[in-house]
Amino acid sequence: MQREDLIFVGICDLAGLVRGKAFPARESASRMRRGVGFTHSNIMMSAFGPIYATPFGTEGDLMLVPDESAKVQVPFDDGSSERFFLGDLRTTDGAYWECCPRHFLRRALDALQEAAGLNIRAAFEQEFVYTGVEDRPGATYALDLFRRQRGFGEALMAAIRQAGASPDSFLPEYGPRQFEVTVAPATGIRAADEAVIVREMARAVAFRLGHRAIFAPMLTPQGIGNGTHIHFSLTDASGAQATHDPARPYGLSSVGESFAAGVLHHMPALAAITAPSVASYFRLTPNRWAPTWTNLGEHDRGASLRVCPVFAPESAEDAAAQFNLEYRVCDAAASPYMALGALVFAGTDGIRRGFELPPRPGKNFWEMSEPEREAVGARMLPRSLGEALGLLSATPQAKEWFGDRFLDAYLMFKRSEIAALDGLDDAAICTRYAEVY
Ligand code: GLU
Ligand code: MG
Image (cartoon, rainbow, N blue to C red):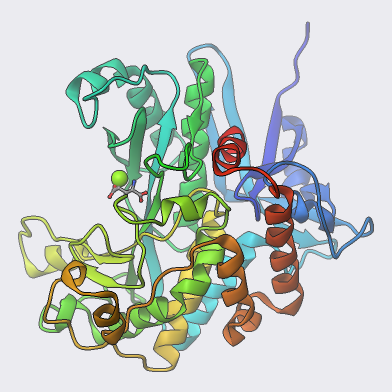
């Protein structure tokens, strides 16, 4: 049997899934320009497959064009390989399409650049459940669990490195069969590309071993959540840290403070983009090390926005280089492009409007009553995807971030996902997402 080399080009779409088409490798030259044909309604393919609703109908053509900077070519022991590009959805005359998720992030980065002359450096910390290991009591963070999955972890790290990202750590996490993988930060669109690539490498390695890496936010309604945490800092034109000032509250520079305040201000609405599945809201509940309020916390993993620690800095420059914030209201049902784009748009709004943070509370956040938390400016995160979507549609800035057409399409897309799960109980809802992610 003869085989012809195929290369896939995909976009991590509104469902947070990588979808696209493959072309013969020998046609690469022309495909780098024209990509593969796509249609507008393809962006409305739900997490579960069907297009439940679409404002675009059956008409129209787009191009899904590979980006040379997002090329993955990773060989495996069995002789197979992962060969794909991530790319952009463009109109047939080559312009970026207004509803392209990757372009949403590009536009957000342009807005940040225009408002403050800054860029963002980010790293996604991703949790998932690996099915290739037995669930045993006491395995949490255990050397023995790591030992049993060393093969998977090492193959995953190698694949990530070969795909062009820098692996940072791999660990057996808190939940049953749960693992976490982190990579070094990257700048701008590349950070989101790498988040997509890391997920796909975990799935690719698990597949070669006959198993799955499941990134669904919750596998059971009462279980331990899989978060996708976004670590970030702003950088100036020279690539230097712009978020840190050790002399100011929380160690945040003035622009860093405004950015953080913008993120906190918009956070309940951002949840509709960064925690965008029905099951995401089973995760955002108390006692799960997942966020429940719009609060900034120093070194507090219960906070939705965390000022991360700086470890044994060798110098002030080293401390500045390490300093970062972590956005925790995110999971893998979100396209990293949409999630990082939403974060950047919200923070940029804070910079533009000169937002400030409320004074640092004099008391531990978790020792405060709910009215006390509200008095220091915190709000409860939405309790459901429907509530979050309502908040997003009521956010005037969202129209500017998305554009009218894209916002309407996004709201329609997510509301049809809720409708598709109508009548299922919470356990069945988790199962539906676990089949997909
Ligand atoms: N699993 C937690 C979540 O759902 C996070 C645990 C941690 O801090 O790493 O976000
Ligand atoms: Mg973790």
